[in-house]
Image (cartoon, rainbow, N blue to C red; front, side):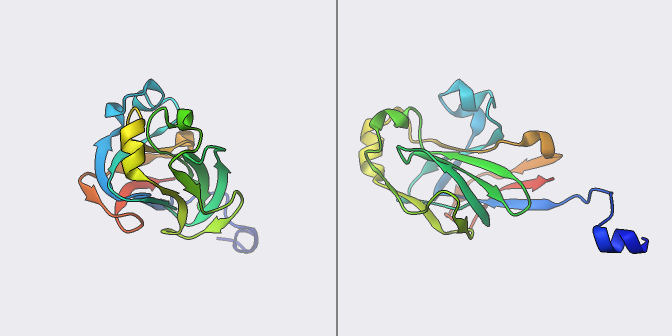
Length: 166
């Protein structure tokens, strides 16, 4: 490694491993089992879904909140390593026009893993939404060389749901 490499960084891309934590407590479900082709066919990206048991959605990584949908049912964010994530609570929940969701974080806000982004009324949403399965997808899969999906019960902000190599 020469002086310029030390000063300006080597041109070689170093592989980075990124752990994505559960944005909500519950049970991991295969993304293919989500009753919406946009997610089940991985049109927006690959990942997992969670059958929620908790009342808040937290940041799954350290990073910056991108877009929070006007109806507060979904948000995007980018990790400090450049992984773009999309968390979408339930299926067709946009039709509830924000009912059952309370925004806590703001767009452009820097967050740490486990910081609350959105609070939700799970009982109300279970009674009104088509599905409460919550996809957690990586939207820049073209930059990801491998994805390892976990299974089982998870705790928001504490359990790893995906391990990525970027």
